[in-house]
Amino acid sequence: MPHSKLKAGEVAGTYLVTSPVTETDIIAMAKRFARRKLAKGRKITQPSQAFEHLQLLLQDYEYEVFSVLFLDSQHRVIRFEELFRGTIDSASVYPREVLKAALAYNAAAVILVHNHPSGDPEPSDADRRITERLKEALELMDIKVIDHVVVASEGCQSFAELGYL
Image (cartoon, rainbow, N blue to C red; front, side, top):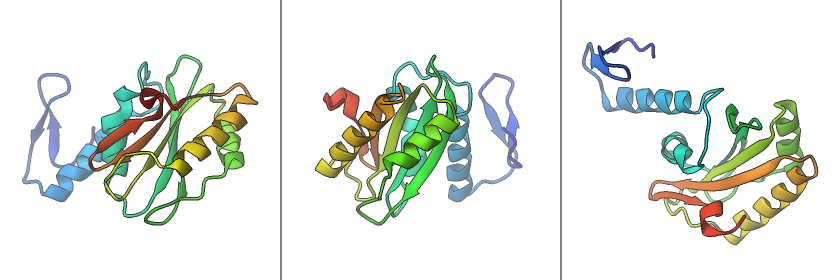
């Protein structure tokens, strides 16, 4: 991973700090690593594999962001994309646009993701309703919704684990 303050260590996956780093540098590096873990071709066998990376990428927004992890038929990542931005407590999500993006990437499955700026990852009734609408729309094109993950500073909640899907 190219970064001016890091050098690859002797052991794979380790790095040496070559100059002083700030807290901002560390957060930026961590976000770069998280994006790399969600890069094209990475296989996701369990949605929980992506939780910490998604939390790192989305928890600090002061507004809601709705994103989608597009996957192929083997559940390898095609792309991670932030599709909608909202306000401090909601984001307008349009099933047509999610479906359009899924078809454009030729996705066979998706993991829906959004953050709760409040810090509480508990899904709302509105979250459950939009998930159902998205699931219905995507199923028409044989695209499976594997999970919907709500990310917050206090953790992540999985719709699949909660039995909502």
